Image (cartoon, rainbow, N blue to C red):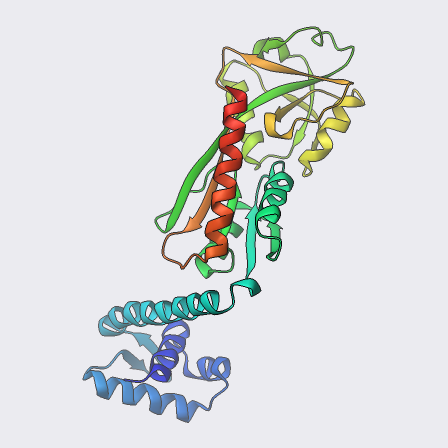
Length: 295
């Protein structure tokens, strides 16, 4: 059995079409068909049911496909591991985030430790993160809320209290804390539905009997502080996104555990480079220090 046979088989199995598979592999249909035929002869079974010009994976083919994909996956992981061992200085750390408020400080700490390593960061949706993790195109995700999955490792690194930001001069600005029911008649600025923090806040507010009245809904969380400062509305802002502004007062929420979980996520079946392991250590240490400061 040859590696080329496995590669050709996987392509045909995924497409179930010889012509399309041949085009994808940049080989002739005749060459592809002969290679699949030799593989079936080696295995002693047919892997496809032939229906006219179409192919359908049969029971043998489905079983063998899982093994073939695993074999090529392990070979690719080995290739990445050797590249890491032979040229660690050429690695690029691939990251994805849904929450960016802590990222600049984390990257600064990582750069102090490994100034030679480049990194690339993408702001993605939860589903986009899962897709790229499955493909092995990113090393880690920093997400709130956490992402669960059979092939994903999810480590909660920080429990982040959500605060109420009000402008200086607001009726509540002289207080250090506030109950959610005190906010039912307020105007709010916030991010759009679908953001983890927004969905959490709406759910908790609904549980105490009101729906926040949003006068602004955007997709840039960093803009909310400026809108609060301009007295457009008040906002729910995670403590890690708090800005040191004299014209904003941050209030604790009374009688409710209004917090978000920040998680570091990676694919449990994929090789993790030494650089990625060092980054994970920096993230855990950074949030560990933050946790001590909040006690």
